[in-house]
Image (cartoon, rainbow, N blue to C red; front, side, top):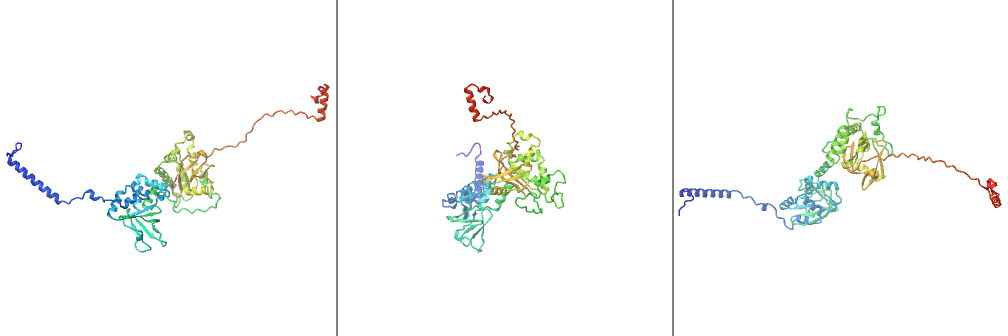
Length: 456
């Protein structure tokens, strides 16, 4: 047989074949010497139908199971179950449906807060099996256990036999028991400190540092019903003879209040909070109210701002804003010379029904009353509800978001209507007596009545 392939000589072809065989053998030996990587299927734990995770997803704790799926935690929990037993503290559905603050639940379900939701759920899982019979009691052993969120939970048992996890009581111990874990039903949701701080930072924007009034003079208690000791209107007096002595401000020896910085902080908070850009624009650009508010706060006064949101401000017409001084007058009616929070105003309207608050638009007052579990300002079609409570509270300035623009009730001058009626000329008939009437009839019978004027 002729080993001649396309013009290659036989000897040269044998050399090529020999070198190729040596290269293949060396490559195979090198590959067999390397450590074999485990396949991806061997890495992932096999979850059987009797797993505690399957039992959780198919249990009565449906709200917790939904949150676990929304938080994308199933792979993490499968990996944890594959390594060791776990203990899950499952809040009852009512604790997540009705007892949980709606604003906090909205915060957890926002896509940008996925990490906070994951931390919250992992805080309910201990990478260790703790049955009801293994619950720590008294001071024996370490009552705290590490969780999958790298926080620690405190387990305790009272003398009456009631078991608790941090601040939550265990209402269904050993509710679900499986070979790889156990689930205990608890009465409420457990919230780690880190998630609570994230929620407060998102809600109140604590990252914007407010100048707190350190070392402020103590307030003198005023009896109920007594007028204010120092009304805020005196600070706006035109002459020095009427104005009171200013409280320690930035120009004083101790500099307690920096009103300008505090006003800047609360306007920044409005912008970061979202939905109140029009209000901030009016305070800063269209009017000089921001400067006036800073001066008042620096002199020791407090303010509550009823801030309409952008949707409410968009309903203002051009005629309402075009008149000279109209924006200032509208905003003055939304400034209350008191420090009020959502809690204080709601308690007041619950107790007294209707409460009238002074405003900087003298002499008008804004009426507050309870409606639908909230505080409603104004009356009739021009009313507004407390929509975003406690947007900003620093002890001197309180900002409460409302869903409408307030206007003072129209001043109706009750002038007496003077009707100019023409006086009617009344001609009084002379009254005739009975005898005269009889006499006139007798004369009439004879045709002589026309001679007497009294008978005509």
